[in-house]
Length: 612
Image 1 (cartoon, rainbow, N blue to C red):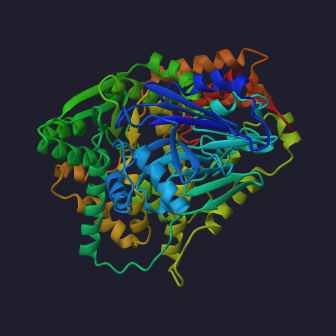
Image 2 (image 1 turned 90 degrees about the vertical axis):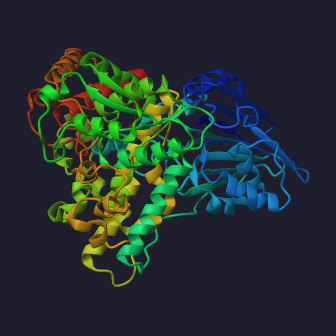
Image 3 (image 1 turned 45 degrees about the vertical axis):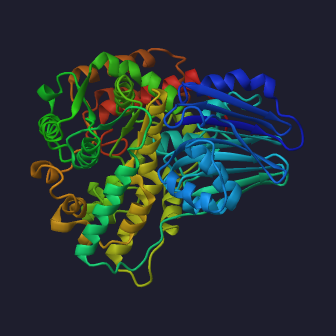
């Protein structure tokens, strides 16, 4: 994986000298092994590299001269069907000097143009500069695993893997306006698709590409979920899912550097680890697995509807089953609280509080052993595993099911800010919700229930899943770790979108279809284990620490958070025992306190200005 960036201007030379070192400096964590730069009349392309495949022949920016036209690519990602595309290109007369996917991607684009995207299986964000034609092509993978932000200052187009790099370009200021405040306080840590929160900064949406020339930027959507009549029998559906899941995992085990898997003892990570362990066993190798827990968590664990059991016993059972080289990471309260700041540095925004911070610390430990790891994100979105898919009352409720808290959120608004905003919080949220609903593809005459479930898939893939993918990419890449997500294979997403709910919920269990498809692969107790989300700390010592941190902020009259947040609301939060979540299933009172700490740090560290 890598970091990419560029500053392109087809009318005059961008302010290259003023931003080079600053932009490169923000990209080092994404690409600690190598860096490269291309300077031309049109501007600069920057690349930092985390070496995973073909160290010598995968250097970037990579150039290609073809019939008098010069092309240069910067690329962040991984293609999982590199050899298939290489074979297709070779049959057309293309030759290759190495075996990197970068070279294959560049030649695929030069040969087929934007149509190459339909041939790619992988996670990617890339840019190709046509130097003679004075044109820039940018693209992002279908599922949105790899990020690509952009903005424009006068005639200069600036893009990058992360917001922090864009902010290093001259004349770009860290400003939030009404839209940004709405994102931070009413939607965060989620983001409206395509929104970069900071004024003027946008993100290329999943499944989109853009073409920039002297006339401007034109964005085109090349992929989205399409509904079809599902004609496969139950038996054929089970077999198809089994084939797609195992094929996706195996494709993502290719690497020239050490590779391992996350292992929580839940269904998703156990399936990935089992396929990987068998794959490695056939090669005479042993799989490395990794799990995370918290200081005294077993002692303080409290069973909830969303988190019914601890992971420890299930992890132990899987390690024995896999015969893996296992590493368990225990995070203490002080480290977790302190990492809230680094998590903001990684995400460039307030995030999921300690849920982000713990993943960052976990990834740093994993990096000590491997450079690539596979993780189970997106299975719940693809197979309908969340409570809001299965609970009819939650499913049918209007609005985003993971954030039914607009009144609670808006109660934090500082009174003078609320007056200046002069808006209806519910209307702001509902407009975003309605837009996503309107974009949901459904076959004609679909039943009300199935139609609503298509909407739930679209809501999750466009919103909740993106928050988790943001989290995984930023926390991992901040640690110099590449994380792959096999359940995010677009072929699996396409197929599962139209599968009827009675098949998805086979046997009356969440992700019942997936459970049936992997029968015999993992122990029965784990195959049938009730869903339990990413673990969070239950240690009361952690809440004591973050409460003290927020108290220190409240005690400062000039704390930047008071530009947005009512001090009285923060005091009520400190006293709250309410289980009402700020976001999703995990962000209850301690995590909401952590979010406010992150918000204050972000406003101060990024020197954010309010423009109303």
